[in-house]
Image 1 (cartoon, helix red, strand yellow):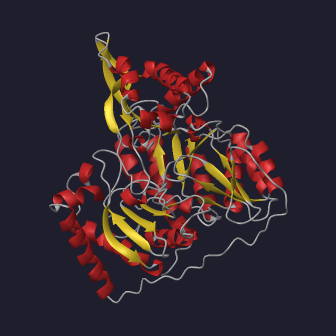
Image 2: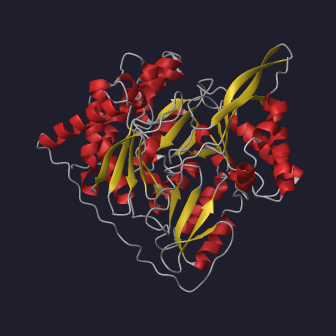
Image 3: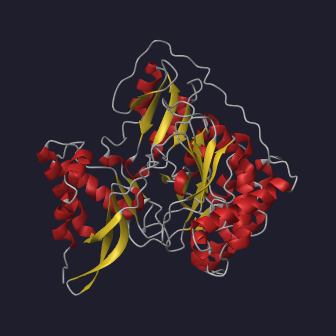
Length: 518
């Protein structure tokens, strides 16, 4: 497989600059610009006065070199807002055109590519964030995810692709990357091979993936990526943009079995073509060893390598303080083998630390969420996203403030997932509690509100989409969370245990907030 040199993408940048100048001069409409700029990983924000830029971090891996670049860009370009996304990327926001051009081009020098970060292209390949260092994992899937990403980048300039082709790798049944319900997912097995799932996805009309192959050797994964592409070329719906996603194919083909057959036919076609897509990857063990120092605390995770630790850092809403992010980068430059891993729930893990180094990282990330509830997930929200319906970030912050003020115990509330619109960038459908931007009539007029979802689950073998309970006014969501937290705390149980013991408990507490307000 020929690997694309990131520098090769520089030849595409003049066209982006030309179109962006026209957009900001008022010569190109917002919709037309969105259709063009997504290919470059950039979109205009709501109002069309600033833009965002999505830095692809393959498999969520941010090396010290890449993190140093991000810190440099933040400092030199005076970036005020960043977001860790649920697709394991870093988004920079409120950018002027010249800032975008500079960051986009200079990022290529350290291997950070923005191309294909939006639009109808393969998105950032996802991977279990602690792959390679996590106790209990089946095997390290990171090298396979990186190889898949290299191949997918080579397809960006090919003919039609499915919209938002999302590929994920999971190293254990935790299934943090939702590999069993992605457009294409590679699910690790104890025997060192992958089960392959396809045609799943969140958003409108969510679907679980169809298992299309068992026990696939890692060296054969690219054959499945090409088979997925060819299956969509043959059977995908290109006429209806709303249905131009892989998850609609099983239904259009008459069911899962027919889809599985169609996929297998394309796989056989790829295998018979003579094209060599076999890969060889090297799973490099962590060479670093502990020095006898020890770290403990709620954010400390012992790695499977004796004496080494990972530290979890979850900025509220996935929005890190810019000074903290830059200071962390400075600190890590002097720590051997340290790197940052982004997770699909907007957590960042700093890995390969001795106990003493972990303590330094803990101090440098003191702004981290302090409970599972504060680690809740939120998309960037309607104050910035041009297609957003509601301000998910504002709702999360209001809930955190209310829960803190009420003194709710740390274990009384779950991690919630908030999306500002049905697109599910906040993965609202797989949270124990989820919220999705909506509208509700109150006082005789439409009011900002969120649909409430209950009992979603991402874990392999227990996958479930949250059940819609009804709509709550945005202004009442913090009060609902406090009421729920108080009830759970009074039981003496943590939320998960309370929810199992009281299957109608959430619904009862939510009832007054779900009631008609007219």
